[in-house]
Image (cartoon, rainbow, N blue to C red; front, side, top):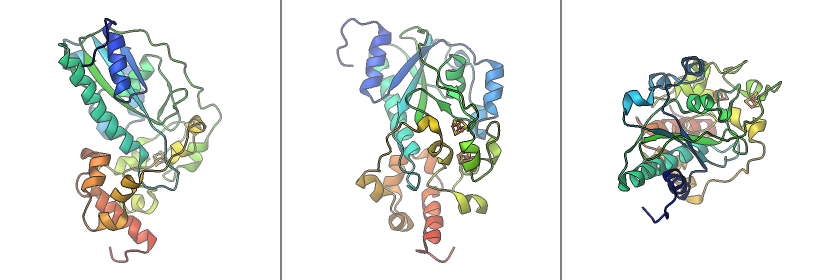
Length: 285
Ligand code: SF4
Ligand code: SF4
């Protein structure tokens, strides 16, 4: 760990997290997630989220604090197939591991824990949940990746975070969703992301999926993201996701960028085949 003077551990950890690229870090109590919030959030989560622990002390009894790490990212244009979120989320995952490693290197305990991060945020008054089921933070919109760590290096600090506006009368995501998954809230089993965990997707998903690994349509149209700068993927990233490269079976670099867990079972190659058929590059299935 670099020298961080004699600052309290919260400040030192915040400084480490920012050095690693996180936009914000919140120091939260190790309380069980409120059952009502947790149950309500289940309705907005994909199936894998239902298995997440909701009591950090049941997993790590020594923990004194939950760190909620916020990684902010800039979106790509709506017609870009390369998934800005998954590139960001993968970078954030590795950065979160480095934060934990630095805390450990200073003699404390720290572990990544897969808590339902959005429920954790809402329970602590951080951000607001939209009709599209996503957490939004003021100034960052929904373009965030969340990671949670536990540690015994410091205690909680009451968050002082402005809560963004609620959705109000807005319906933009509901109107734009190609799967009809959004009404007063998200129906997760209707969202195409629910069907995109495995290597091959159902025909209806193949027909409408706008990009690799998921769908960001409800985030592109959301006014909470209106102030964010839209960027282009770098040339290296574009090369990694070239259809011809993926169709040749070379998905190694794209998988490294988007994360190995998210891209198992030849998912990127199968999706490339779907896009190539749509583009008329490939005719046979
Ligand atoms: S991610 Fe896509 S399919 Fe899912 S709710 Fe948003 S717009 Fe609909
Ligand atoms: S598009 Fe509108 S309704 Fe949907 S989450 Fe954003 S603000 Fe809420």
